[in-house]
Image (tube, rainbow, N blue to C red; front, side, top):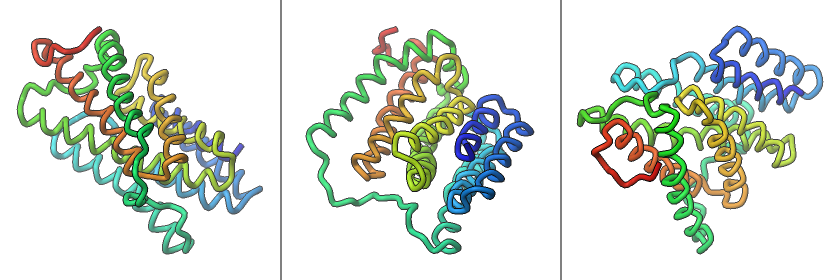
Length: 255
């Protein structure tokens, strides 16, 4: 119940942008954890801290330098604060960001990366253009906006894996079966992506993606691999957004 309340509070904070109800549900989850499971409280508090930090800034595709700096700073703190507390206050090393694992990616892993590109090509244009959701991102016809959009899409994609997978999923796995920890993080993950711009029927896309990323991390234990998956998908997203705003550009999509 405590973890469920913290997870569902993300729907209110990010999906519905109802801070009062969201913070209330978040606090209720932490209070329950304090009453029944202090170890869970420690880890949920770190997840909650990151969520609160992120909720203090508007989560949209405003590509002004001031907003990019503000949002980038908040996202960075949402990862750094839990890690610092966990490492230096709790003196534990469960939160890790495994980049160089020393393992080679198997053939199945390489084929999966190709599959991600193919799925993105088939799904994203239909989703973004048929719903008009692409308008949640700015027109990148201006060269400055083009490169800021490219940077922003990739930076947020990397952050997703640092916070939702390496931090949230990892901490929840200490207390719950992997499948349940994955469901809990996926609710937070997809709620965040809703506010970023994946609206309309976006959760039907983002929730399974979040689950797959958690499961992939469980199998590979590699931040590098899950980031590669995410960035390949986001590269197709970026190209689709460019085309959606300027249909004569990149006329390579089917929708």
